[in-house]
Length: 481
Image (tube, rainbow, N blue to C red; front, top):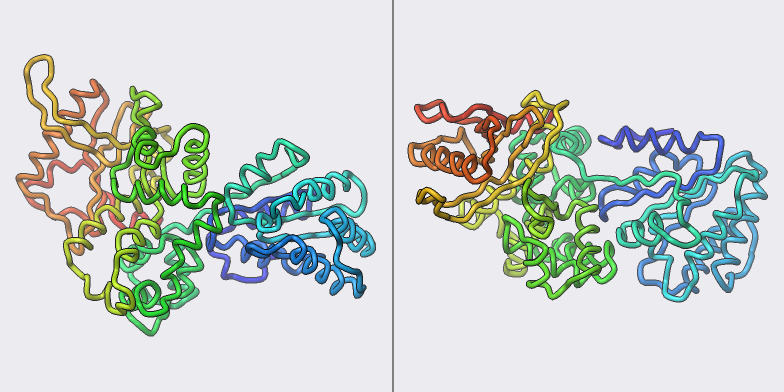
């Protein structure tokens, strides 16, 4: 059913959408994920030619207006002139009558931005449940596809509903952002940008793998000018994207932003206790926020072995939010050359190092493949240790390791992630630092596993007398596998 080759990297999701459409029973499929990731485009391009009814919820619009537009679409398709229904029960009854009137074996319905239709006191969810539950095994078979960017609503009120919609979703589909490889395919195969892998990385560190943002690139101008035009110039189209993104994704978006902005100030991450103290949030509310941010790939939670649950760390991993809070939010208004003129500044260089680390964390699968350990179970986490004196009176300076791949074959990869415009050169001082830190790690964690010093770099490690410390090398191109 797929009509367009623009569907980069969505083969698994396309297969699921088509398979459930062809099944011999009614199906209720919910597609969710962060705004701009391509949910609507995926469903329309895969199944659009078989839709019997399609409607999109309206942002911050009263229920009466939503029902009016809903009925207009029914009337347009049925060639009838029915009046606006007084409630959602009547609206869905009208839709049901229209679908039955088609006298088909199967009817396909797509409702986009479903959460926006659930306005206060509208009884929308109850009516939706009644509509779905009323079909049962009767003819025609109903294929109901819904999308929504408001993640809290999709997860809590639909997929995790405890009422009439409990257990009714036959297949949830979370749509993730593009990987580096998929971003390269989109920019170079579809947009014809002609970017190198390093340039693709630079784009990814700003925008992540979000198709909507990537589609705005102009091949006639340099990469840095594209970034300036989209984020820093007068009337830049993505200047206010951050605010709208959180309003559309999450209810109580102010509290979600509190957590994100707090994490953006401590790039190595914060414990739940530290987040609670800094944001004033606690209990079930904070748990829900952390869970929803994790499920949408805005943050990651990790915990080293032997640590108690309260010491779990949370870290900001959404590339666009990180870049916005670091640069766009604080940049002077209408500075159309801001990013271009920031090249090689200390502020930018510190950001690129951290952003590259986050890109690596989004590509653990590719890192494991390069290491030849795809089939080996592993736990991925970071580690830090403050300076301390051990029982024998030895003093340890403290340190941190941003990525550890703790493998079930009694090996640990202690990863160094380095962004560079050329081969990365290890000097005598840095070699000593790594050796001392790895010794401290073994001592403090009391591990007997083999430790492998692993470097993940853009162009590799320069071959000099200090390179012997490197056990494994992973290059940028390996992250594109």
